Length: 283
Ligand SMILES: [Zn+2]
Image (cartoon, rainbow, N blue to C red; front, side, top):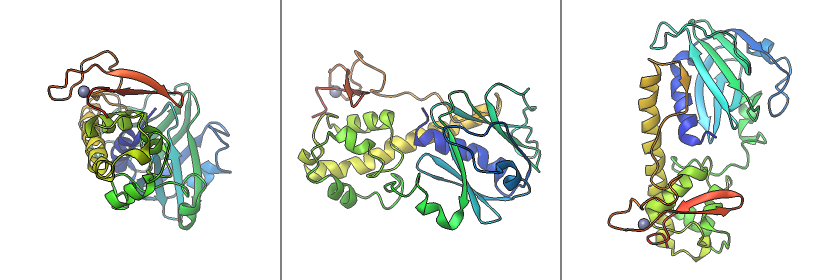
């Protein structure tokens, strides 16, 4: 499942093909993904210039020149492919139509954007840009972890008195937007905090220390995504899924990478999801 760094990588990969370009032709192959697609979506997209490709949490936001914004969520298995873009660096021929190619956008610069989603947990909506912040998918989201709103003071205030495990608190999208299972595990390991610990029982200074650690974990992953984009330009044009090594995620039974720790990574299930952590150095 793509997390924030993967979605940001997709955004950076799509931006050169989409920003400033006009959607010359839109093809929508089914009425729904996870939810119904917008009414007359192909017609409403055709002829629109993409003014800006942004991101909020795990949502891609394509601002259009008619004051609408196309919201795109990749869901569990959604993939974006860029082909045929000859002005910039993408130069793959358009692939043959594939199963699960649900939405295709042909840009006037020659690029084709293909949204493929086998499991159809993805979503798209088309809304007036001025109402974006009130959209039901967006309105309850907490601050962006890389943005100014996510500060030490903010996080300590939000976690004060909370008796849920810190892992669950950081996964709560109302507290901070876009953090998922993998990067929460990684951040808690770097911060030396057990995922099982109750959020409100952690000393405020240690909670504050999570803020720079979360930013560091995410920006390293975004950088790794950037390198993968450069590689993908020689590969198949698919964006977003990149090889990235994790210190604890998926490493059950392995040695703790902490400096001189000597612990062994353990896996526990919290709210139905795996947490990987070192019981020795994460307290
Ligand atoms: Zn350790």
